[in-house]
Length: 247
Image (cartoon, rainbow, N blue to C red; front, top):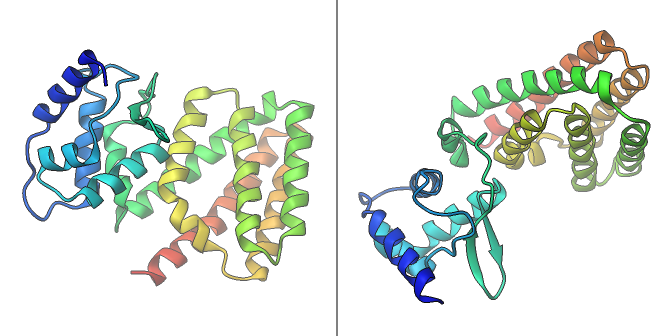
């Protein structure tokens, strides 16, 4: 590590005062997130080792490790095997601290985030109806094929489902909306993975996605809005049912 990097690491660990005993991973992540977005640390900076961060915060290394993993999912840090963990360049300003609690979602915040996601998905598809390209529609069609071929493989089905929604967000032409939706999906991912519990749920979800695709193909903003609202209602119900079952 260079003298400059060593100085930056020392400054960072000094700025992170010990936390109270009993702090959970979400609190560690929130403290790190607040510091990383404070402007006191330059993008691209290599972070101190886990043991140094743990000592500065007064917590175990496992809590720091899990918090950094969550921040990596959100795109705040990047892990380079054999090199270390770095603050990502151009950290999005659209990851406000109001979302930091979502790193370890609980009741009622999971429900609030599900509601927010539903509204943003509708907005994204309405914008996509005006901007979607033939290439994007073809990729969505391929996602539908993957969903149909994996009705019995729910993990693969969920991946194709997520890809379909990412295409819509990209097709909206609104980068801010796209990044915010991606952050919310990351926070809800564990519950999304558990939302589909049988082939019947997958078949229903596939039918809903096909309706959205057909409306998008027609560039009909009213129809896409109606179909996405209907889909998000049932998708939210499935997601929250999985969440409630694990409480």
